[in-house]
Amino acid sequence: MSIKIQANNSRILVVDDEPNVLRSISRLLKDYQVTSFLNGEEALAAALKMPFDLVISDYQMPGMNGVEFLTFFKAIQPDTVRMILTAYADLNSIQHAINEAEIFRFINKPWNPVELINAVTRGLEHKHILMENKTLADEVRRQRLLLEQKEAILNALEAEEPGITKVKWTEDGSIIINSSNYD
Image (cartoon, rainbow, N blue to C red; front, side, top):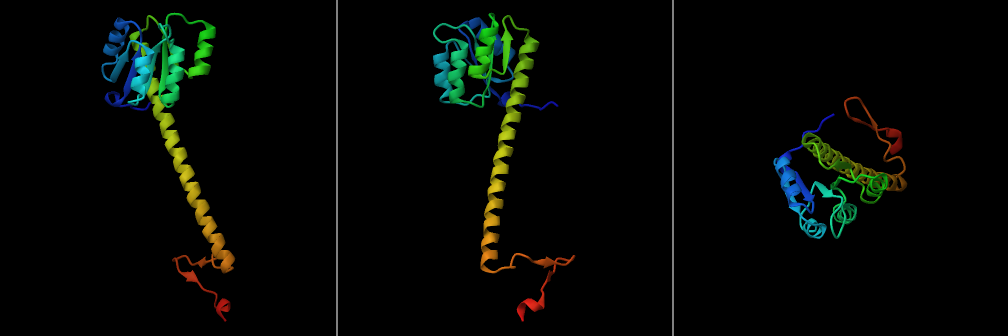
């Protein structure tokens, strides 16, 4: 199943300490609204001001590595899909990134442009599905609350006037009144 995501409406944050990498990814993702930063601190400050749909961070950066950055970022924008770029993929760092920052996808440096675009597309589809599920779950909770409120009202009416909620209907929608109840 493929979900059509409007590229120009999707906001992507890219963080890498190499300006050439930022320019290259920005060109590759030209159909999206790409914001880029050379360090995690500036990117986190931007995340406090504007929402992003997807974030891609380099793994090895001076000051704050990609996992640390994405862990902080997750606290600010937990629904944003997080990806990491790395030329150094060892099992421990992968495991740590998945557990700490809940990374959606690892992208190896140097990346294949088609694979990077595909990863971004899949990440945005994933976010869309998660947000839709969240909306549906919220609606189910609202409907359940309404049903509970209606049930409480019916129970209160039934307690006050036993039998009042036990109405019999005909096929045409008329109410059947049992005259023996009113004698």
